[in-house]
Length: 447
Image 1 (spheres, rainbow, N blue to C red):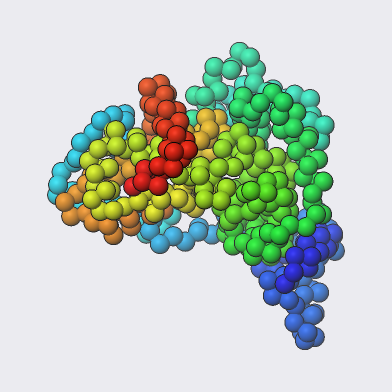
Image 2: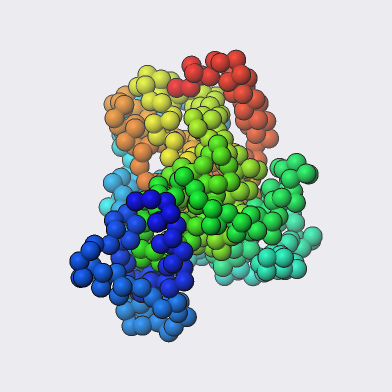
């Protein structure tokens, strides 16, 4: 397999499309070449579309499938080895110095046999109305995409309403608004023009046909990325093609980061709400203003920084938990790496992931450190139990977490981030980490 063959295949299928996009499996054309037999050739030919696949009326098979997908487009729940309930009771207490629980506490959490279906938030309808009254359309971006701004009289409501959950129909507008605002606030003035949606969309098209040394690896990863979603089910369907193009273009953006596997679930989630050029623009903003450059750079320096801050919070607020981690030689990287690399994709239900991303786009990288601390906070008694050991702790923290109450989880995160003393300490710990790195002392600074 060569990268030109990969790019050429996707380009050709952009023109023809593929039949059964969204409900058929599709035919593999790059990871395994089409066979020389007549049957293989005919099968591949039959899977090609005629360029009108997404403009026709739904056929009965497609309509039957779409009737059973959940509200986010998943037709099957992803399978997970360890589904773990994240109980809300410990989150009713605000973070603070907390000592060991009962020594005879159980070492396991409450396991779930199946992933509960996503529920429509009880107040979503009223929140839709509030967001309609809070946002107003601006002039379309030069790229033709409608952008939104906040009515000045409603500015004070943005934080509260974001943490209560952005209504799903408003996520496209709200996420673009939050991403552009945060980027403007955390970028040098000289870079702001370069970060506009119109400029980044043009950058996307400028590199779309250029070769990338990561094309083969991206192609290998694309069909493994949230394949249970209707957009990404069909091999070389519109969703998979868009995902390939976005990751291909972004791999050319930063020579140092290139492409890493954790980018796939992030881009795929964004594609559920944005056009490919908007997703590319979002990845660029995350890469810069949100600190993801350091997360994805070789050696993952941003990941290590986040883990250092997380450990300082645990050492200060949960000293017995921190001691238990040291006693049992549990490194934070062993359980938290995937949280930070994928922004909690594949670690919590999709609906919860979206709620966490609402907060992340509003408040930035401290959100996920706080979520990581929340998980440890919830299971502090299991971690410090006299019967706990390396295996029980690591197994617990490597679970797929299903919040018993999303609203209480997000409220806990919001209140923790509103603790000005803690936020000041987090900023100082980031500086301390950079000083340790500069002095070459970071190697011994983490669990």
